[in-house]
Length: 220
Image 1 (cartoon, rainbow, N blue to C red):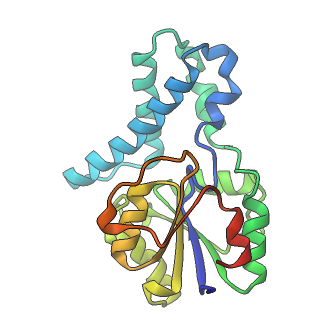
Image 2: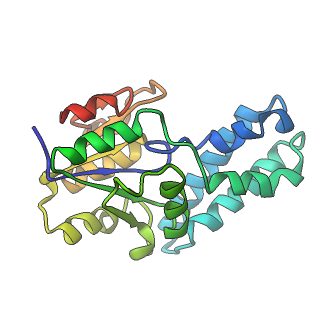
């Protein structure tokens, strides 16, 4: 079954959030992987806590705050790496299959969009760096509603803009909590389980689970 729009989460789904640390792995040292995982975990945690407080802070600011925390937790990492790591985050690598998948879906007549917690500037930089700007039709940032996922108002950005019912949208995310929120909203959801993680939120399960985006290019 094809859908009118295929909408993708950005970080972890299209773009590799660990690419920034990987570029400076030698300088960071043996704690690099744990450092990167904590940076990402805190980035998300800070967005959820702000949402529960009814406060909105630009995602770039949360990215910087979470990096500061990672440096505090891993004193072996040189704080002088802060700027190089933040610079690298503006130009994260996309996963290898992404360009072909998005191009294939677009050629089938579907709209291609991003729906992300990222700020407009962050997303514009990532999309341009990966040369996806010629494929992606629209980039929706939570900045428009000043609330983070999984607030329903975030997912409504797509349906309102495209004047579509939720069931006409296929939403893809590597974040299981994001899939749960999108499922509750009414999207057809695809969980891109890159890390082979155990399932959660089983009361809001995905329509499909895939190890990567690759199979989507066949319009499933």
